[in-house]
Image (cartoon, rainbow, N blue to C red; front, side, top):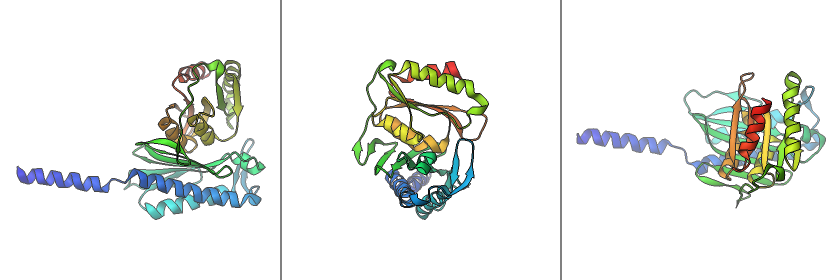
Amino acid sequence: MGFAFDCHLLHWLNSRMKEIDLTHLLDTAICAAEAAGKHALNNKARRTETTEVFAHDVKLLLDIECQKIAEKVILTEFPEHGILGEEDIREAPRSHYEWVIDPIDGTMNYTRGFPYWCVSIAVRQNGRVLAGCVFAPESNEYYTAHIEEAAKCNGELIHVSDTDYMGEATVFTGISKHMESQQEPHFNTFRMLALNTRKLRINGSAALDICHVAAGHADGYFESHLYLWDHAAAGLIAEQAGAEVSIYPLDSEPHACGVICANKNLIAGLRAIHKKCF
């Protein structure tokens, strides 16, 4: 009996030793986001070097370069981990950890020299996001959080607003680049948001928008078609700042979803608009 107990204790201790420290994960996310973001910032003269052009979006050579830079930082620390990025996927069947990377969120803004874009990096274990960093190089803002720590911007605690009425709210949103297939729901949503809030804004970077909700600069965020890498880090940051985040998976594409983020007073109203339009 004693021997069995000792074996179980040893197994528990070994499993605890194998767990990765949350601070280490977050520090790695920050370093990776910083390295990728500064590469993009220092190469703005090349911001029109495209690899693909779409009706409502572009892909840049710098997207690929920044993804690889972020991956190098991450895999130097955690070579056994997987990567799920907008520009690359690296499966790691022997690891439960996966890094979710958006190397430049707000690519169209970046290409036009509009300084509202960011790098978003999160790490998740068995599908649960543990830590994340959203780095906005133009303003030198680092939004960070892990699951056992409150959200911060540049080391200072942030918190969602306390606006309690939709008519007084500022809400950020986006018009999906896939809107051709479902124009009516997208434009109906835009109309309802515009009529039922004090101000509606389209800024062009989902991750940065959600972080501004986390910091109380806006009261809510609504987008009908995003991808995991757009919201993984920012969603955790918002939750750790007191927001509620609702995810609506889309069957049309892997990792695609609708996202609503708001303080607890406004989330029900935004969910009702989503339900009515979609």
